[in-house]
Length: 434
Image 1 (cartoon, rainbow, N blue to C red):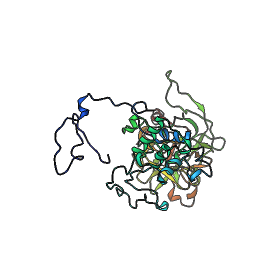
Image 2: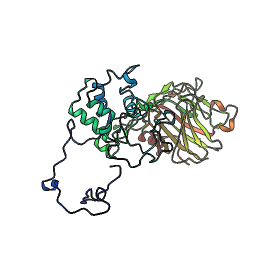
Image 3: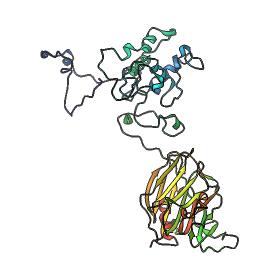
Image 4: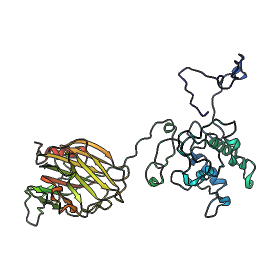
């Protein structure tokens, strides 16, 4: 059927109405099929229970067994490659079978791109190839692929289950995917969930569990405080805690981490160069901030130098919302922002746990409370060889663009802070919100 038929619970329908003479009514009679009990639907040969039809699982193994030894390589016979090699959205065999007309199929949306030409191309898309057609226009009965194999092409003999699977695929209008879910573009071939085999639930519209990147525990790299005692050019050697939450015994684990000194106030020309932290899979930044003004579109809190791939810019927007920007490559900047702002002229604790890995996300916090989770899913590391607090290297001659105000207890972590860790930093920190 090329139309939808809807049934309410308990409702039955028959073929009468569409498949009967229009100039008369059907005489009542008892069909032979009604003279015996209904038979339970059983799987076809080679099948096992209900499941979605999926080209890579149903069709490609048959082609691999019987066809690719001739139809593969640089010069496949008949200029027909039937390998399962990935194309942008499908596979070589799938696209060749359809484009060469070996499988007739109903094409109700846009067809091959204009540069491919051919009768299957649809100019503007929707429903232009859905005209009523005579019986056997489509389906396995008129499929050149099926007919060629039935004739014993190159002495190929399909098993009954193989023939049933091929014919079922053609009669189902030659689908490729068994559900709407999953990553399909070839650019995602190395990502979890790429063209995953569908389940019966996913074929029914139930989304599979989301794929998430495994957590990376936080590890404090560097800290900065106003008024830190310095005897060696900014390094006080003071112990600070990379794991603020207390253990069951009540103590707080500490690790000797370098504590740098912060100026009392940043005036646009003032900035602090951070100690190189290399390339990181994920980082977290936590700090106390009191902004005097927010006149620039992005007011720097922690900016890596330059704007190359893997650059990280953590800023406050003009409305006070914390914002994260990452260059995923070729000036493809990903911007995400918190769901709430901070006020100028008041101390606030701001943090972000930034995970730019595939399936990663950014988690924002304001005053110890979650302030938004935004998907990143970039697949790039973060380059922290050179970075600044309160300014950007490109704005040395534009101090009005840089941060004006005060920062305190700034912490840079390798890995991802948890909700509890951020809450402890805000609770036990050196400032409280005004």
